[in-house]
Image 1 (cartoon, rainbow, N blue to C red):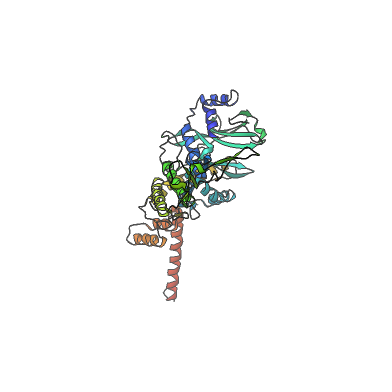
Image 2: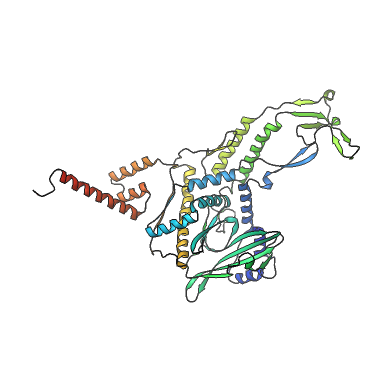
Length: 496
């Protein structure tokens, strides 16, 4: 899909419609897209799905000639992306908002959109494909969230790696026709309302592999406007997140790269070793060496087709042209190299782990499947450092998502938020620390006057500064009430 879109944007596939719109946009914008980067995204996506033809299409020979088959795979692209996503964001993560009414509104939006489940899924796609986009919109008077993968988004302009404009690409099929919907998010200025964004919708129809020709939106979207102005608005309504890994495919691009972008050779080696391990049990049982003159072919008198005495597709048989003692058929037994294969796969898994941000030993192969280490890890481990690094971008992304939801809700008069509010994301660090030990450490810091009580409350309970102050106020009130009761009990509370 992206190859045809890039071709259309760069060279033009149609003389009417798309080219005119691109030329108008190019009058004041430089659409800089690196086709190589999108080709990499296609590779990362293939590996995530478990089949990349240059890696997994194997050619082999039998007595009947050359054959092809699919290589067995350990699916490490899927495994690593899923593992990192679950470490960074899971059901134990909490998003706290200082303003209670706003918090309730956001919670309602999240529940209606099944946000926590969808976000974890798309966080996995983010680590696999190098990025993801969350885009709020209004439907039937409700704020909805659209989750977009990296292969369906093209940035148009950006400032300091912050994408300010982009185009979303969606593909639909009806019969033998393919429809491509382009949704442009472009900065614009309204003379009355000020700066904001203009959303342009275009639909293209094709019966081939190209983008096709521009057609009416009413074919698929009868109620969708060609152009919508959103003013005033200082920031884009979409949020782009990516793995916290420098892009060494295109250093000038704001787009991210997959966590396994620099481990492709290792992944191929892992699958090659696993394929060999799997085939060891098929090919290692026996090989039958047959003199070539015994591999005869006969002609079927009725059909005229050639037939051999041996099954030509069976890899067990090998013909030999040289001298063989007494033209004997030799049955050769081969010792299975199970331990050698497992050892080789584990060595490669350790290398893969280091290349993708995990500690050595995170992934291991026992002969049946890949196991993932679940024990508590050290704060100095590579896994924990990678997790904390990714959390930096994810936290900022979640804060931007909430800001976008608020902006869209206010534009459509669905909600009015306070000017100042604080969003805190508390991630699950149970893989690295014992909660009881952390609580004891915070208490000891307070006793030794090395930590304010409020700060300790924030760490222990995972709350905002305002919430910690409220907790301290309630505790002080309870202590004051308890002291008064004790005074009355001993008859020293005043009176006769």
